[in-house]
View 1 (cartoon, rainbow, N blue to C red):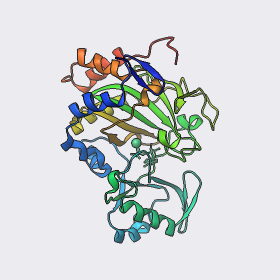
View 2 (view 1 turned 45 degrees about the vertical axis):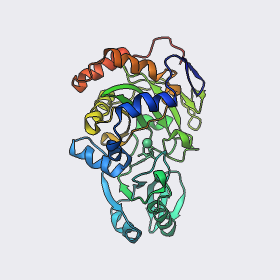
View 3 (view 1 turned 90 degrees about the horizontal axis):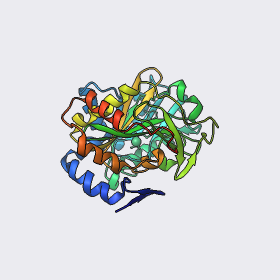
Length: 319
Ligand SMILES: Nc1ncnc2c1ncn2[C@@H]1O[C@H](COP(=O)(O)OP(=O)(O)O)[C@@H](O)[C@H]1O
Ligand SMILES: [Mg+2]
């Protein structure tokens, strides 16, 4: 049977039902979900394993804690506020500067303390969390993107998504913030998704929704052909997130900090399927290749070598 997804049609395309039935439910035990559905837990887990993450400045856990924000960020002019159970960029506020009690977001909006307090209050009440459950807000280091991405990002840090199947990286893309996505690299917010050749770490053309874009809509620079730095380190981190969580089908979100290099932002137990559009390649074909030939018990370096050989972007492929 042929799968279809967002205009991609073919045997190798992974659809939602198959993803849920054949991969997520088989390889992601439910009891492990809390490790990745709670970004605070993931951060602690990664730190224990020596995987770099943005530094934690503080946690706002209750309505009562909201007034501690100025204290938490007293020595930080830049920081990010993030609901621990949020997804798709909802509720994240990235503060890139401030004067007194006025804060400037990375998208250029000026917010006062009342606004932030109100936002924190909503977040704690679960406005941005899965199922609307009570939440906590993480206050963390603001990632600064490496100059390499300056030409193809608009006001925000791009992130690199790697799908990892039982420890083998199978597909990757970079998501580039746009004016529309307001400093966040989430496709649902309007960011550009561009595939990355797993073997070389070189970007392919981008997509917005299902439409191919060759140039960043705001900066107008070409998207394809960029060599993502620290590519092997990024693949290594992504592969190790399997051992970290025990989840067999995950999306690992990594950002490249200008000074600190690759940092893990979050892990996803139900990663989206649009990565296939960004790569013009089906996931199912790659997952089947892994199931047929990969040595899932091999060390991470070998799993990465396997991925690089098997999933090299075909030369001359229409991208
Ligand atoms: N600490 C941070 N510094 C700068 N930007 C951030 C930070 N955390 C998140 N972002 C921006 O918000 C996007 C979404 O963050 P993420 O942690 O992946 O949460 P979500 O579950 O909402 O996708 C990131 O891709 C990035 O563009
Ligand atoms: Mg994310």
